[in-house]
Length: 361
Image (tube, rainbow, N blue to C red; front, side, top):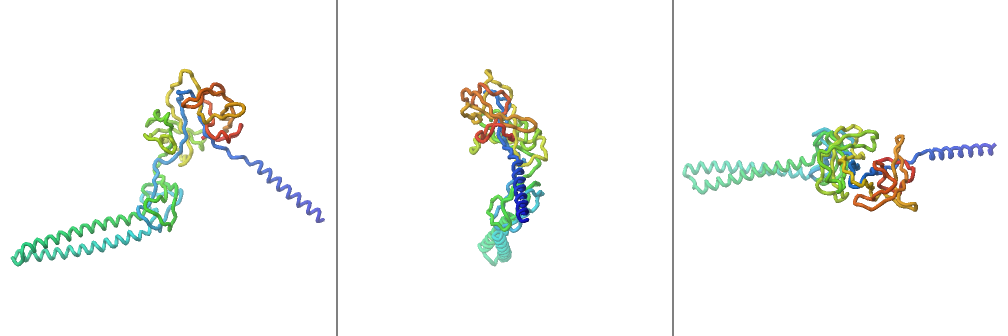
């Protein structure tokens, strides 16, 4: 009887592990994102697509203008705030002490000014009666002017110290949504230290970098087409609002901002976007195809690229043998194996496999 029970238990364990193994086999590998570019002509690409990131039109870094310990903190990621709402407060010990000292100095200066005024009135009366000299009268006037100047200076000091106390409070400068929180209550922070990020405004924009060989064709107010990697099948209209005159040393590209003319509530800050520019039709006379040098791989069979083929809502990479020509400033000239308009992967060739499903970005 014990042997039967043991055999039955062993069978249950075997079935359990087999079912777990089957579930693991059923799990699909994650779809790998891949950067792509359309094949175009040498010196005559009328359409170019560049990758960027969505963001709100106005991003405000929130910080205190004083040092201190945070005693009140009304900030959470995703929180909607209104203009003028109190978001955070410091203990502000030093600023409040300075403010109280300035009030004390103001009261003292006011008292001295009143005493100097009474003294001046007394000396003036004696002078008018001929009981004191002109020098005593002038001295009384000078003392009163000095007391008045001291009082006015003390008033300005009070106003300044009052502003310093206000620097220990953060109020929402505009309506918006908290996008990031970088501090906690009871944390000791420095003046100017970023404690949160506020996404303000309703307009959305795409921020991207344009290479130097194309930047001269990009102009303010130019219309572009925008596709979001996470919103398949949707195309948005955009307009260039900013073109930087200087290159970004970190990316070796020129920063460009694009306003989304017909935004959707589904577009969220941080989403990847593809921005397509129409530069006009200026094809070269010999119709030489060209592709980026980084998109060309080489193995025992020769040079190859990974074509991206789209069907039934999926994007599949296919290894395609090609014959390359000379290396130009825009990349390798292509003699055989590709046609204009085809999409190819331009990064991470070492990690791609023939027939692998990918996600274009």
